[in-house]
Length: 173
Image 1 (cartoon, rainbow, N blue to C red):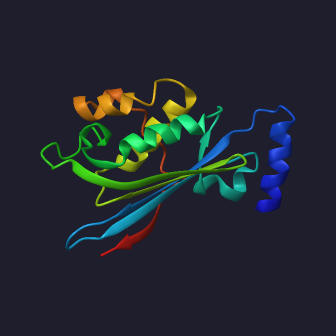
Image 2: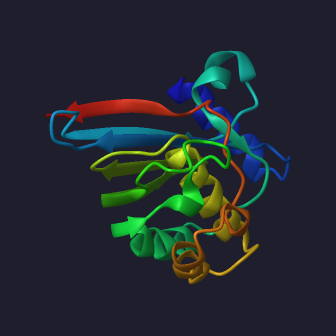
């Protein structure tokens, strides 16, 4: 796969429009439940779909990783993640979670996002990553994350990313 990624990187540098892959992960921590779970999201070149199609989410535009990291710093901490919860899911569920870390790595055309928290709401990681992608595209500023927490409104966030690329890396008790 590394050799293919190198070839695809050259294709992309030649000006052809080849999508990025997005890989994201989550780690959950909790009492009587997993202590931590890490989910990973990957982003990279996707011309040879058959090799990694089911293991990455594709992004067809350039992302500003520095902006994504700026927004990620605002996500870390104890917040009410109601805005990042699936709209129709368990409206009465306590939506306060503590995100210990959001790490974003870029290696060529591949971007990986690791999220570590004491627990996750349904689609929380996919919605956080969708929001980070929209910020990376320049669709809204990184500071909007603060407004999302304050207003608790799912419509302010980015789209739910597809499950491709999402994996649970580790669970700590």
